[in-house]
Length: 204
Image 1 (cartoon, rainbow, N blue to C red):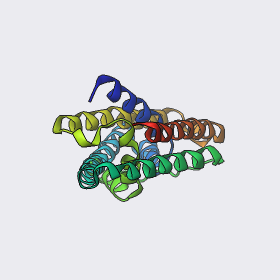
Image 2: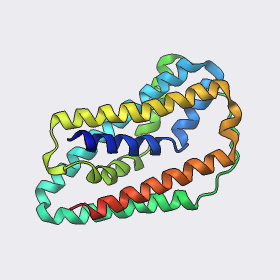
Image 3: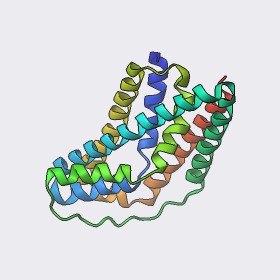
């Protein structure tokens, strides 16, 4: 993979990672009650879960590309349609005030496992990666090095965003209860997702 492809993938993941979801709210709740270290360990678990889905998505796409050859274009357009669909849903969504309950004190390991299970318990995550990768990765030429680089990008993107959420959670609870802030995040991420879907469809 080229530096440009990795940079583009990083930016897409970084912006999409900012969309509040179950994992983000779990990190916030844990950080509220038990401090930043708990949010950090939960983030580590979430990223490890992403590693599993990244490898599965890349292996699956590579196998399909090899079997289908030129017919793989069908998968490409389905991926593009799925990303655009997700983006439109975000653009149409109306954020509401969120009341986040404080979590009970817990161990670092339990927070790590909670983060891991939150990710693995969300099968839509692998569909997201299957839809995203064709825009940035030459599926037929994915190497072990490429896989490692993609995992590094995911670590930097999702890890940094979730760590920022944990830090903000410790210092500013009101940020996460603001519908206006959530609306801005959703609209920005939705626009990026629709654009990414268009890139997937247009890519030769």
